[in-house]
Image (tube, rainbow, N blue to C red; front, side, top):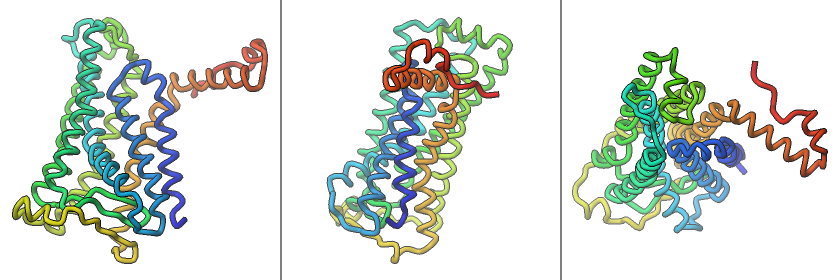
Length: 323
């Protein structure tokens, strides 16, 4: 294998992003759950692609490419939407005007966030067909990639929405931070009055994660936008012209690509694993995580090592707290 770090990095990212899943599932935070889901799906796709298309540009799985390239397009907007939902919720629960949230309010918010995080990306996956000049591309070592006819319409449908969503996310984050600053002395009591499962530490960690993810993703989206604009956009002549050879699959071997293009491919490819690593760093070492690790260690000692409850209790069930 030419680049073993690619599948290893993607599989590791897919595994790590699942580590915080149990406590986010308990909190029913649809924003963070959708981040986990989309990062897991895309990293699994990336890992399989780098294995199947290692040092070749064959086309053995057309249906796989049709499905996965659309999912990659969906993730392009799903991740910014999910981080926006996280910051929107933080701004809501920290607002001075928020009333006590009951079960019906939480259920409505979950449904709304689910539609935003999974329904809207489906719309953009369908809209991508408008600027899909051919079926898909296959790049050696990276596998199948979405094909986009980069005209003005292509920029508006594919690359502009994440930048717009990033702006909205940062506005919500700024509002949430302002609300926190205004009542930082009694913030924990405010969250409790709002009947929120958040604590001050969880609130700040969620906000820091969302802002970091959106800044990281937006920087790479802006870089990709520049790469496609500075070489010049293609003219949109007509629908028939753009889709005239739609069933075509373009194959790109490394030997045909410029070193700068290959470097850009590596940078943009690693964006998804890096996003999963960032997510894990914020939640994989939190107090909730350490408690879950302690439960797993305790269960392992009890059911695998067959230690008695007294031995398990003596050794402790929690990891040492950070100093």
